[in-house]
Image (cartoon, rainbow, N blue to C red):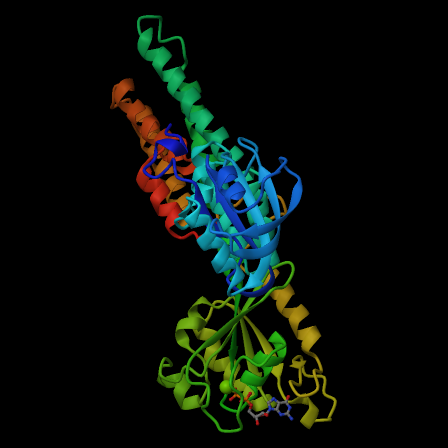
Length: 453
Ligand SMILES: Nc1nc2c(ncn2[C@@H]2O[C@H](COP(=O)(O)OP(=O)(O)O)[C@@H](O)[C@H]2O)c(=O)[nH]1
Ligand SMILES: [Mg+2]
């Protein structure tokens, strides 16, 4: 395996702003590499002790004062990247971080490429590729559920599972190699049935992991909840009220909402992804004639549909217009309940965007419906396949195992040829974890990272 240092530019000491740019109380600038300490010294940090915060009057190498800073040195190899890392906490905003960055560059650092810190961490064996992706997922998480998932992946949950699966492939390869090496012994020292059984259970384990991908999608993107109903039913108002802020444009003129508007509400156990859509251009005739505003595209994917109307008749026509077009669960919602004091025992949720009446109950009903809908909720510590890269790597391994089993069952291929499928399966799992340092795998993963990570 290559180390970070053997890569182009791997000897450089890199620098980046690790916090978001713009106005903020504090900004952190991170240096990593062999010269991190000497660069910090050039900026006035003469007495750093590993893992101790030191207050430093920071100045440019040419003498200009920069800021009153707090510096922590993480000595190699016990650092995020595995190299010497220096973290400089300074005041945030537009000027100070830019000046300190420029001073680091003047003292010999090179601006880091996106994800370069984490890339070095992977190359130095501080974390594997799956954990590196978890770092990105944690930062990009838009829901608590996704944050939990990323944290468990960062802790090595998925990595351990993939390593265990890879070990099983290796064991299977060893069994077959043994069989190939000693073919003359009776009918082989290893019963073919034993190899078949091991391969089949491995294939099932791969399939089981693959089948978690839809759960991960729901955790990442949220349960799709589409709001449908006639123009002026109060859909956009309901959308805003449920999300607790004014996202959709609400007006008394029918047909204001031209395009679908989406927002994710971070709910436990599952995030909810609400869609408010007029979508008249997307609807087919039947819906349009009824004047139901809903995009058929969304309707087809919806897990939950709120069939809205300010009257029982409107709810009825909405429900009948959408039921044949969605496999999602339909929840009837009587909007503008504040305008209609008549208590009724219709089985609908009565809500008012105006007064907030019934909103909490509606949200709880959506939670329950979402849980009951097609995708089973993963247990808190379940290992899930969260990325397309994982899914396609596992699918390759799974398909190779299937091919191997076919060949093994029919006896059509000689063992060394059948074993090629196992080799390919092992390679796919190795690529996933980053055991084989395929440069293009790394390039693909780190391309999406932000600078300073
Ligand atoms: N009194 C009352 N008026 C509402 C309520 N929700 C919406 N409206 C009004 O109904 C009109 C249409 O609302 P809007 O949300 O744009 O409907 P949409 O066309 O279905 O998206 C607007 O004038 C809103 O102020 C409600 O809960 N109570
Ligand atoms: Mg609207």
